[in-house]
Length: 286
Image 1 (cartoon, helix red, strand yellow):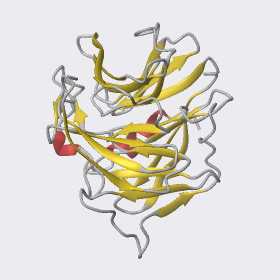
Image 2 (cartoon, one colour):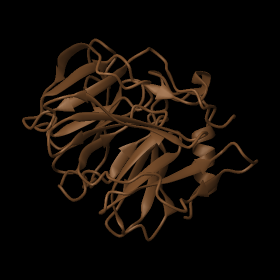
Image 3 (tube, one colour):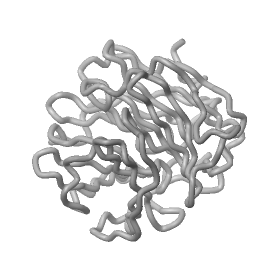
């Protein structure tokens, strides 16, 4: 597979943004310009209720919900309603996922392919991959890195790309290089790629190394974009006001990409021939 492109594209020309309020009501807002970050919105409407805990958006309508009791659930929104799994709106994937508290809720994120990344309080960064098509865990607890205790938040932003934020607000970019050689490698940062993110909450990504975040001081919804080829930023465009009261603000994780769409995950599941599983198994330490 080729590496990331300098061109950022949006498959359907918009990014579904899912704010969830403090009573658990979930909404869908259509951001019309996810590749340029202008203040332009389409339709918005409520799509769910009872989402207390932690909300995570994956690719192509796949959503994860973590209840306050630590139950990890999978759901799929098809653009009109929620698909059923054996008569239920969700599948229970696991128990004991403690990512709803204030000190842990930003230690979990989902990338373009649907890989879930977690950073525990001991500094262990792990990857977990549930195959939507087979409805089975393909990779569980793949240890990518250790000793990352300096970070308090992570956000997955592309295929195998994870940014980690330290207490001072500096962001560090870790990634899986699966295009340079026959075997994938885990690449660690030498230095921070940006600073000044300490006051941002609800970090999420629409894919393609775009970022959505809420400024906790004034409630502004911000958009950023990083070009990993040119190593350049498009910084802090305000795309919304009054987002400070939301429990979560998450974005469909593959609304944008810098990789070919032919191998992107879709509503039916992965379309990459097992490439995600292969590269996670190649870079894991356990």
